[in-house]
Length: 363
Image 1 (spheres, rainbow, N blue to C red):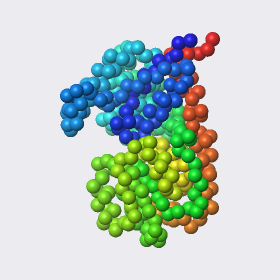
Image 2 (cartoon, rainbow, N blue to C red):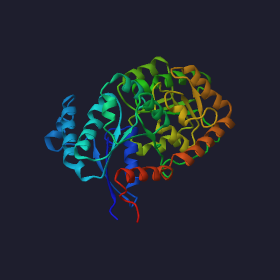
Image 3 (cartoon, one colour):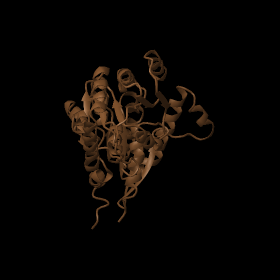
Image 4 (cartoon, one colour):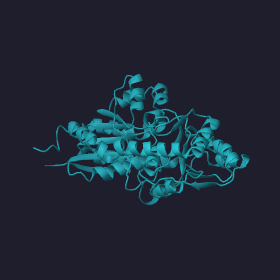
């Protein structure tokens, strides 16, 4: 039996973020299945020789990287049975999934557009070229039912296969006693609103002077967030910079409560990782988050852009360790039952078999 050959088109781990992490994890697990043979095509290839130096030059790197990426699509896609394309929104959608969909269509290869951005509604509303481009895909798959609903609003059909967490890497630890040690690990982009986490922590620290906050991440708001922490007079806040995903289990283990405050989001894998590691979750209810966090069962939900509400929920956990333990236990059950590779393996297999015309099925 010949395996189904899959091209996985996605950002490499050179671009730290949830998509790169999930793509790497998915490819590793899929390649362990005898039915599949998965090869990676990065949207951000490392160019050889002098071209690599040009990739370090602002603006020039976009042109050089895009040319290298499109060249690899033209050279390689014809040899695959199915093309699986990870997708963000806006300009990234134009640069990365769009060329893959067009080239695969030209070669007659079926495609899975794996759309993952919480900004989908705005993207589909404002970018008129997005819906017809998405319709080039044979199937659209999102990691959350939230995005399925968003796509339906725009008369686009999608199905959902969730993200998953490696429970061998992200290990459970009971928090007893519960310490006032908080973790934020979202990138420093406006819609992830790390500023609200800092403002909430100022309220928390006023009542718990020993409280600590670990802030892992980087991005365009770096200077602004450092300046905000200084203006707020925050103590025991550690900005850790961009942290490799291999180090994240250690940061979860060092922390006792997870704080998250985006005003736009889809299905943050960091919440699933917090579940797996035993941290009670306090988060805004933006976008698709209520689809993976049940208020007072697996976490506490608060409105976006409300530092007071975020702080109040966190303080509630510190004053009620039994509630914190119950939320952590609920999160653990949730991730074990719904967000492991064994939970999604057959969904991916069935989709690939369908698109490849039944290839990979045992006689």
